[in-house]
Amino acid sequence: MSLIASDHFRIVVGLGKSGMSLVRFLANRGVSFAVADTRENPPELATLRRDYPQVDVRCGELDVEFLCRADELYVSPGLALATPALQAAAARGVKLSGDIELFARNAKAPIVAISGSNAKSTVTTLVGEMAAAAGKRVAVGGNLGTPALDLLSDDVELYVMELSSFQLETTDHLGAEVATVLNVSEDHMDRYSGLPAYHLAKHRIFRGARQVVFNRQDALTRPLLGEGMPCWSFGLGVPDFKGFGLREENGEKYLAFEFQSLMPVRELKIRGAHNQANALAALALGHAVGLPFDAMLSTLRTFAGLEHRCQWVRDLDGVAWYNDSKATNVGAALAAIEGLGADIEGKLVLIAGGDGKGADFKDLRDPVAANCRAVVLMGRDRELIAQALGDAVPLVRVGSLDEAVQQCRALAQPGDAVLLSPACASFDMFKNYEERGQLFARAAEDLA
Image (cartoon, rainbow, N blue to C red; front, side):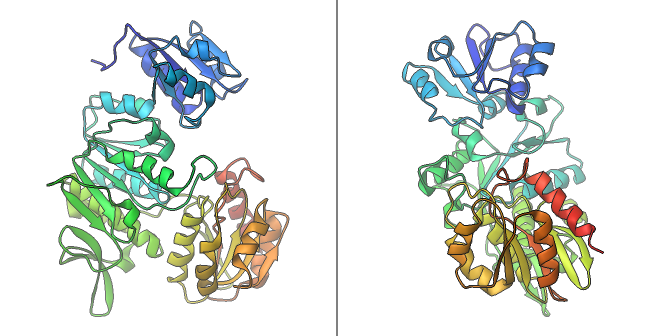
């Protein structure tokens, strides 16, 4: 039975992927609703009109009077809550909610909830694969892959959910079995007033959580905890009680839990210190929900990583090429630069640039100086990155991704790695980060 009153009127605001999942959910439960979108031709409009021709849909500028007919607005994560029409409706007593809040009200199985500026998708996928290896009927999605409401099923034993700050803004009480914020660095500063506001949005993930996992190396990930809350940690240092980390035995590094070594780091398929942290985070989350270590460790031995996330593309003349197009913010690029830089013999030749989303690039300077041979800059905000890097390393400016790949080939030496980790969104030059990564991989593979 759905936990939603069917005698009230709802409006779905935003007709993208999550909006369409809301439409299906509400229609299947006989709830009275309409749809609104600020765009004249939203992505799922044709599907809505074909499958639900009876639903009232309004496209274009939001009509406050129309919105105020609803008891509750389910707002797409793509639409800022600061939008004047939404604020006006809220001021008149209309509740602003979202698909994750509705999912949480209706999910019957425990939820593993994962957020963070970076590595959400890798850790979410890893935990999902660990649960499957342990024989659990697991559903994985949210901000990654399948929308949350499409996952709801009485057959599911465990939900593993990637959640963005935008999704969490409309989530009042998630009630996860275990929740984590993996890391916090500046992102979406074009939507938030500053890092504190972004941090607060992320930490809504801990509301109602029964256990938490935090990153020992990032104080911003640690929530204010009530007395007796079960708490696990991960980090690249030596772990202590309830901690996951790294230990050294006979000159070899091991993934470890508390005082017990689990497996040698060299057996991980995924490369770099940042991926060691991702593996430790996944182990902490899996352990919190009772997954056995043998299933989790066997998954880590076979998991090759996700496309566009520090993904190995090829080796050519002693140089490895990596596609990290998903690094759409400074924190993600830093993780790749420092993680991969520490894991190779030579230096990195970095491709960076694109739409910086209002970010400050100054934190790139020292890691680039320590790990990079040169940086190839492209895209709209390349000069902002150039100013931040100063004279740390040689800078090469290019007009296209193909030109960037050619320049990297000329600059890289045997033992080096070429890394596409842009620290920027892709929309100034590409459809999305996936297209950017695919074109980079293709250009690298085409090198004779």
